[in-house]
Length: 115
Image (cartoon, rainbow, N blue to C red; front, side, top):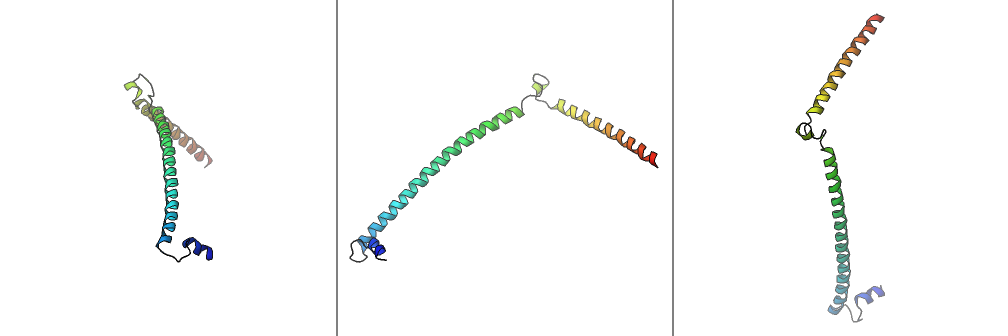
């Protein structure tokens, strides 16, 4: 306890107004160091985030460019139209319906044969 009392009362004349200055100076020094380190860290993190955002923006731009490139360049609206793809999907759906119908008939034939 004597060490703590000596810290708060360096003059040894009892705790008075002059002793408050040392405590306030110590608290200001600690607070200033903390504020400086916090500001430095915030700037460092902001710089890292800015670089990461720039890299992410480049990746997104390249992905969008790749995903939206023309399907068939120089053909029907510079290849930007998806009509050809839709037509092809319609053909696939029709073919699947045809195969499904034939399979159902085939399975029904086998089931009727077993009865």
